[in-house]
Image (cartoon, rainbow, N blue to C red; front, top):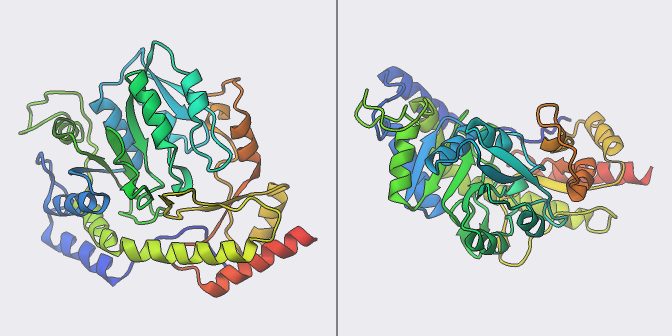
Length: 362
């Protein structure tokens, strides 16, 4: 048995969409509003998250970069980010010339600690990037209060939380800009891709230029931009996947509910949803003692469990900062994610739970 931690769920519809694009030969578009499939996907994405605008780009990282460029984040600025995240969150800040300032997390859902966030604010602070890690919704109410008090902009890193909501509102739509990833391991995929959502037409217009070398009509660069365009093939895949997304999310929720029920009596930290929160169950993440030992034994049984993220960003060789982030360090040594994606069956869930129980009882 081999149960992967996350795999793309694609079918004949996506294959047909790709071959159709290839046959027509229009593989990308440098037009300001993008190609036919890009525009179709953007409408679907905006409708799903209930945002006025969606702007497709070629990765989740590009989404973060474009969002920061649109807000004119630059050298000399500081942007507050969690260290317990994928490195792209911090790398996007560095790409603007600004400095990422690392903030600790909360134990209950691994997202940014508003109290530590407030302590890290300086005169140079311009923006905050809360990360909705594993699909868990960051404490947006408290972060919003802090941002308003200090006149800070907010870019939501919703790469892992497409479909997650709090009080019925989608992650990515609480603040100025929200950024999503469509990497193959996410809840839906474009092969590679990402998108940004906003309700601000001026920001949307800037983003359309930023993803296309700052141009509007061609050879008329008005602001700084890069080639961050999403190809038509990827957009065609994304449109099909977006239509399937509700079913994907329902399957994840079913698997997570079953797994939580079976594991409820074990002495481990099981993921829970807080009041008014509805997570997308991108990653079912427990915290556990002897994580590395348990992880190795699960993998030996063919269970694709994984640790996200054993090395916090501030401890990677590139960033290497000697700062104190105690909960980040605690989480990095204990978290373990288990497979619950749509291809995981109820029998798989029972096997995963049984295997974990056996390992803990050894």
